Amino acid sequence: MDLIIRKMTETDLEPLFELLSDPLVMEYLEPPYTKEETGHFLRRAGLSNPPLIYAVENNDCFIGYVIYHDYDEDSVEIGWVLHPEYWGKGYASYLTERMIGWAFLSKKQLVIECSPEQNLSQHLAQKHGFNYIDTIDGLDVFRLKQ
Image (cartoon, rainbow, N blue to C red; front, side, top):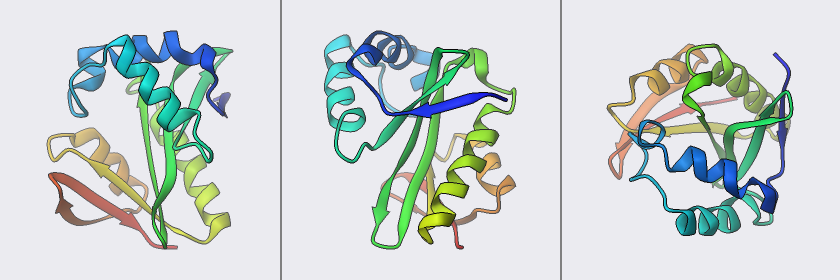
């Protein structure tokens, strides 16, 4: 699998809008975004310093993004949002392994938050050794201690 994780740029607005305006993608996240909301999200999360999200490319094609940012003093939150055509093919699992590696170098714990109805994300968290901690603010929280 040859996925590239890189910093977001202004040119990611269109593919990011395509992703975040898709009701299937946003089912467990938020209502689908407008282009204006996508622009705000890109500036706030993708172009911030440090970024909260990073673009994911496959063969020079934007396929989604990963979430990687401080959750609290001791932990980093990780996650992924991918185009549906990349679901069920091991991409999210591969990206999870990469982010676990990043966090291992930082010696921080990892957190995955997801909707209680988001069974596939829960499965991925548990597959990679995360333990369910609690439901906080309506989201299931899984933690991996290093």
